[in-house]
Amino acid sequence: MRVLLADDHALFRDGIASLLRAWGFEVVGQASDGLEALEQARRLHPDLILMDIRMPRCNGLEATRLVKAEMPQVTVVILTVSEDEEDLFEAIKSGAQGYILKNIEGEKFGELLTGVSRGEAPIQRHLASKILDEFARQASKRRGPDAPPDEKLTARELEVLRLVASGLTNKNIAQALVISPETVKFHLSNIMQKLHLQNRAQVISYALRRGMAPEKPQA
Image: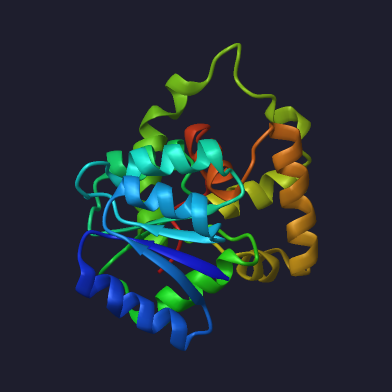
């Protein structure tokens, strides 16, 4: 996987680049702000951009919107110190397919990034739990006559949708439902098609907005 790093701290970028190379990723470029990230993405065509939020000239949220507008095939994952819920929600609305905090342990970071290649959304479980509470409070307000047609989903698809929203991986969902990971991927593909969603992050956002998630995921 070809990776572009966007962060205004050069030392941090170098450290992440060393980790990624050790794990077999190809670091194709580094950017110190959002505009430079956009320029390098146009030139280097990365598979994945690890994007900080707080950067000069153009922050990571705006840069994510610009990148996804021009290059929707590029996966953008926010890598930040911000646990602000507004940043998290805005990142997903902007097209980011993951949100990782910089205080994460190296091994877990590697696991989340490896999951990107399998179509998984790298969002830490405690962040998923954190936003469950907020969306649960707003769920009743979100329901209206123009709400998306949840009735199109089968009972099994609804189960998968709720477990995806809890932050579980395909493997964990498969174990919970006693089905294969391939079957989970099949159901997830059907869910996205029926609800007109483009990626796992949008599926999570949809489920949480609709109050369809299960109880808080276990640690």
